[in-house]
View 1 (tube, rainbow, N blue to C red):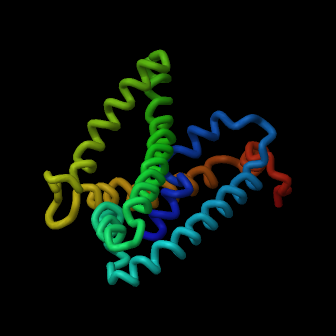
View 2 (view 1 turned 180 degrees about the vertical axis):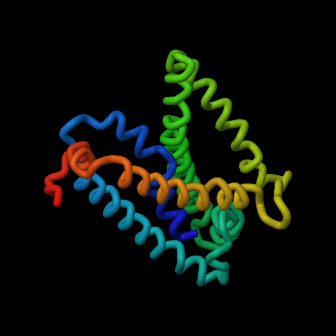
View 3 (view 1 turned 90 degrees about the horizontal axis):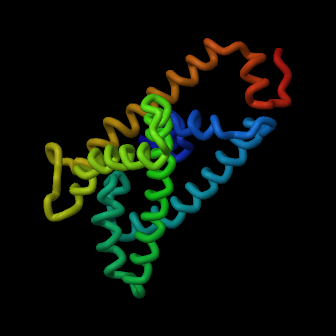
Amino acid sequence: MAAGQAFYSLSIGLALLITYGSYTPKGINIISSSIAVVATNSFVSIMAGLMVFPIVFTFGIAPDTGSQLSFTAFPAVFGELTGGRAIGIVFFALLFMAAFTSCTGGLAVVLAPIRDEFQLPRWAAATVSVAIVTLIGVPSALSFTSVSLTVGDRPFLDMMDQVAGSGVVLAAGVVGAALIAWLIPNAELLAAMNSRVSQP
């Protein structure tokens, strides 16, 4: 689960890096850019952990609660804190922004092949992509409503995360990296990354 979260937060195995990489101007050093992204992401993750885990352990919440931590446990915690309503508003506003930016990035992956394969204008491809993503996302959104959509005893969102999230992301990231390293000559890889590392 930790590896899946790391792959997801760095957009590894989701085709995001391939899609965004196609827009990268020539001359950008991919290695130094990757180091900056990983360092920033790691810093933010550590800071989030330093804030979240004290709350989790103080209120006796299991840290492996999953998505219920955000949508069930945290609201109950905020209700017991002084100024909890304001904290809750800020928390869910930031959570929405994080989810929205992730969805925007993921939409680019869906939109690009639809535009290329069907020769659609950007607005039409965006409309089709949003419709597909919305249709697929509705069951997950119903996990924490009065509908309480579950699979077995788990919220549908958690099941989707385990099946299409962590598992697929890990497999796609590892297999994709292996194929690239195996099929593309080292000299071409280093040239494409604009790396200053010399080929051995």
